[in-house]
Structures are given as structure tokens and as C-alpha cells.
Amino acid sequence: MKLELSEKQQALLKKLPGVDRILERTRVEFADVPRGVLLKSAREAIDELRAGIMSGEDVVESADAAESTVMDRLRLKTAEAMSPKLMRVVNATGVVVHTNLGRSILCREAIEHVVSAASGYSNLEFDLDTGRRGERYDVVEDLLCEITGAESALVVNNNAGAVLLSLDTLASGKEVIVSRGELVEIGGSFRIPDVMAKSGCILKEAGTTNRTHMKDYEAALGPETGLLLKVHQSNFAVVGFTCEVSTANLAALGARVGVPVMEDLGSGVFVDLAFCGLYWEPTVQDSVSAGVDIVTFSGDKLLGGPQGGIIVGKRKYVERIKRNPLTRALRIDKMTLAALEGTLRCYRSPDTVMEKIPTLAMIMQPLFLIRDKADNLTKGLRSLNHETLSISQRDGVSRVGGGAMPLQDLPTRCVAVVVRNMSVNKLERLMRHNSPPIIGRIEDEEFVMDLRTVRRAEIPAIGGAIDHIIRTEGGL
Picture 1 (tube, rainbow, N blue to C red):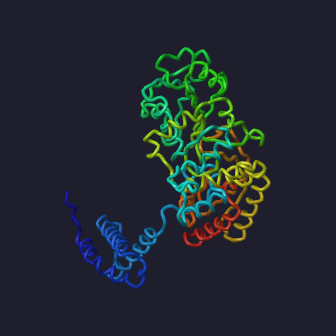
Picture 2 (cartoon, rainbow, N blue to C red; picture 1 turned 60 degrees about the vertical axis):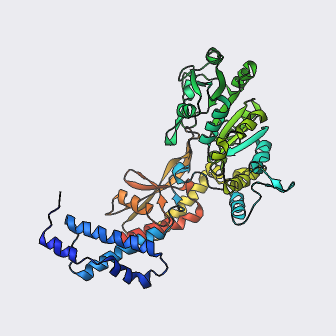
Picture 3 (cartoon, helix red, strand yellow; picture 1 turned 45 degrees about the vertical axis):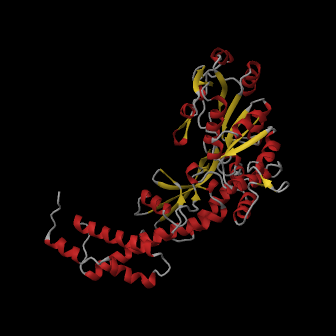
């Protein structure tokens, strides 16, 4: 239906500048901006103002005012277009392994190794001893075997890929027995039954949601059984009247009946966190020593490295997985390999690994250090002397995140702020659009920042963001 415009609207539309006129004005001010970016921004700015006039929302008094409005919008659009989409943010959520915020922070050794490998040529697939083509997996395989005790290892792009690849190789067209209580769904709608179906496996459930016994696995065994699969529950826990077959007992059953056993640990960990005072989390070494044939886990999350899916286990099975054509489709690049190698080398020194891996250090961060950061932030905010700014502290609970250790409470200290005459939703949005973005949460009509996940060097950025918001958005 054709929109009927008033005479006033038609007159206003005639005042809009043309694209050529706007581009002519940008020649000096935006000399370093590509013409394609300016052209797109100019068209969008003019179209927005035109739409505003047609809807009756925007009014421009003169051609000069219209041109000035378009230029203002073009500046904002150009700045946005020229800024990187992937940027560093301040994580003030208290979730250490935040899936949406890049998960684990890499350690210094990993970062330095990535820079070295990415800034020049490398021996990614070149054997320096023989002078011939090599295997990229050799870069980290020896390290993984050394740390976990496995016979062989392989790394793909993520743990979902590791599970898919392993199932496709070992049990395509065959039955895979899984406890009903382990048919999990994690973030991004990753469901074990769906992955099994995609790999060509036939799901065969054992036991019930809360109780699965050895006799349930034994009853499910048959001539078409290709694999026994154990899946770590990761992001939830079943408590109360429960029963599950241990990894060691399931591995023993598989050895007795001649069926390989695979365990998906989800978020892999190499250190005994129970020894550090946290809830017990099964380590990769535990599974390998229990006799599991194939173990899959994430390279990021609790391991603290880059995103990747790690497969360790007995050589005869890992070698079969390596020969699967899907392995090439799921392979990782030199930067991921470099980051993983740098991370794994830190695990060679058990006495210092908790300090070197940022994820582990953040999880184990003493409460007195978190309180000290909260005090520093509070002091800095009060020094801004904004009468409209209210600041308070409160105790809180941080989370490990990344689908790991859902029952683990990490005591923390939070700073909450309120700006008079500004809604907390607007404050949260403005903090999120700051440079760098400050990501917190809203609780009880306050913007709350958990200092466990805020690094000390990031505290001034928070103060600068709040100061800028109050000065530019009102509340003074």
C-alpha cells in the first residue's frame, strides 16, 4: 500500500542531501576510510533520516540541518564499521569460564607461542629430522601422552567434533550403550543422542535417569554392540537416590566382553581440584588409568587452553580415528596448536601450574584478594565525586562456568552501582557499549560487578566507563 505523505513531509524529504554531496564532504575528514565503507554509511544515514521523516518522527528545519544530521549519523556508522567486531571485554559477571565471552584466558606462554608461530613460517607439517612431510598432531601428541599417561592422542576443532569423530570411527552402524542419566544436552543444543545419530550409531539406553547398575549394561549387550559410552554430566548433577557404574568398572566390563569403552569428560581437567578444596572433578589421568580406551575432552574450559577437542587413549583406536576422512575436516590450525602446546607445557610443572593457567588461578583466587580489588574499585568510583552515583559492596557467589562443576559455589565480593535518574537497564546497556565493554549483571535494580573475574589492570577502565556515562548521559 502506498504511503500518503503530507505536504510538509514531502518538503522535508526534498531537503535531504544526495549521496554525492555527503561523499564530497567526507573527502578530508575521512581520508583514511575506504570509499566502500563511506558509501554504505552515507546511504544508510540518509535512508534512516528519510524513514524518520516519512514516519513523522524526524523533522529537519533546513537543508543544512538535514546535511548536518546525516553527517553525525555517518560518523557513528563509519566508526562502528571501522572497529573490530571481535574485541576484548571486561568480564564482571563472576563466571570464570564464560562460554559467551571467549571461555578461558590463555596463559602468557601460550600467547607468546601463538605470536611466534603466526608471525612467520613454522614446521606445522614438516619433519625437521627427516626433511619430509610431517604430521601436525605430532606437535602436541607427546605432551598429551606424557601428561595423561595415554598411548596416543589427537586434537580436533572442539569436543563436539572429537565425540562425533570417535563415534563415527569406532561404532558407525553399531549399537552404543549409554546410561539414560548421561544423555545430556549442553549449551548450543549439543545433545548426545543427536551426535550419535549423526555419526551413524544406534543409541541403546541402559538403566534409568537416576540409577544405572552394572546389570543394566550387561543386559543391553548384544551382537550389534560396538561401544560402551560414558558421558560426564558436566553442567548438571543428579542427587539423592542415585547409582552409577564407575569408569573403572565400565572399562573392566568392556575388556571382559571385548567391546571398546569411550568416555566423554566434557570439560577436561589435569589437576585434582578436590585436593585444592573444591568439589571432586574426574581428571583425564583418572580415566586413562582406569583402562578407558578413548577419552574426549575440551582444550579450553578447565584445561585453560584454546578451543579444541582432545582425544587420548589406546594407540590402536586413536590410529583408526586419525585415518578417518572426517579428521581432516575437523583439524586445527597452527595458532590453536601453538596455544595448546604453550598451555600443555605449563602442566609439566605441577608446583606452578595453578598460578600460570589464568582459569585455574581465577577459580582458586583467595577471597581476600577479591575483596582488595572490590575496595580499589569502590575507592576509585567514589573519587569521581558524582553526586548521582551510589556505590555499595556485597558478598556473592561466582561460578566456574563452561558447563563444569555446577554445584561449586565460589565465594566472592561484588560492587553494585546505581546512577540516579538513570534506569539500571540503560546503565547496563551503556556499560556494554563502552570501549572496552563492561559486562556485568542486574540484581535488585543495581548494576553488579563480580570482582573475581575482573583483573586488577581492568579496574581503571570500569571507573572511566562510569565517569563517561554520567558526564555524557546526564545524572549530574
